[in-house]
Length: 350
Image 1: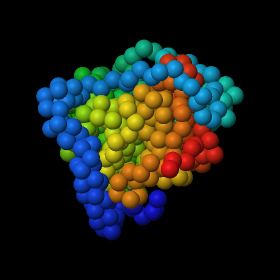
Image 2: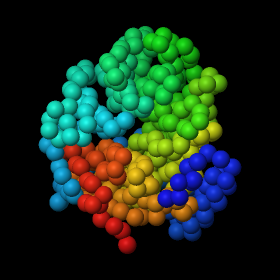
Image 3: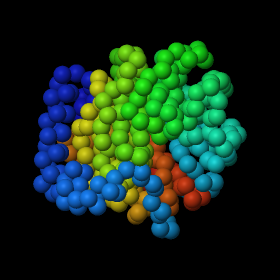
Image 4: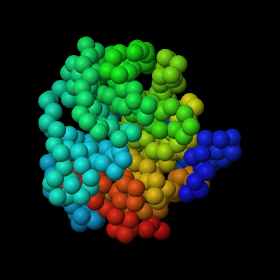
C-alpha cells in the first residue's frame, strides 16, 4: 500500500475522496452497499438492522499456522508488542512467546468487568465501580459512574463509557475531568493514534449499528454514522484509521478519523464478519468471517478493497489482531484455541 494514503494532508484527502467515490460507484453497480441492500430487501433488511451478534461457526478444518490451546477468548488486543487475551474471568498479558509458552501474566477479573482495549502500551478494562489499567504498572481508578468500557489515550487520559448511559467520561490523573453527552449507550470505545495531534476516540452502539467520534478536546460529541446493517467489532490502525466489521451486511468498512469521522471505503467480505484488524507490515485490512472460518486480507490502497490474502481460521474466531511482522493472531470464542499465522502461512489470493 502506498504509505501516503494514511498521511493526514491535503493530497491524502483528495486521494481518499476519489477512492471513496470509486468504491461507492463500484459497490452500487453490483448492489453490494448497505443502502442498496435495504432498498432491495425493503422492510425485511430494515427490520434486521442492528443488534448484531456473532454467528456460530462450523467446526474448523485444518486451520493455518500454529494453534495454541487456550480457554474461550472474548477479545484480543495488542499494544507495543504485548498481547492481551480477555477470557471469562481474566485478562492475560504477555508477548507472543509468553502466551505460547503459558508464561504470560494472568490478571483475575470479576464478572462485572467488560472487554479490554489497548493503546499506547496500556490495556484498560472497566468493571463495576472502577477502571483497571495494565501498563508499566497496574493501576485502578475508582468511580461512581456506571462504566462498562474504557480506553487510554496516548497522552495518559482515560475515557470510559457505559452500556446504560449516554455519556462518556474523561479521567485525568485518576480524577474525573469531563463528562460528554453522546448519541447512545456505548458498546465499544477505542482511542486511535493520529500523527501530530491528540488521539481520536470512537464509540459504537450495536443496537442501532452506529459509530461516533468524540471531540474530547472540545468536550463535545462528534458525528454519528451508520455502520452497514449490523456492526460487530471495530479496530483502530495507524494515522486515525478505523476498520469495522458489518456482521449482518457482510462488509468491511474503512473510516478515517484524523479530523472528523468519515467513511472512505466499503466492500463485500465472506459471510458473518465479526472483527477486523489493520496489518501495518503488509498494508492489509484483515477481517475474520465466522460462517466460513476464514480470515481475509484486503489491500485498501486502490480506493476499493482488493482481496490479497486469506487463510482458514479456528472455529468462532471472534477476535483478530496483527503483529508488527505481519503475523495474524486469531482467537476462538468456543475454546478452539489461539491461532498464530505468519505471513508465510497466509495464502495469496488470485
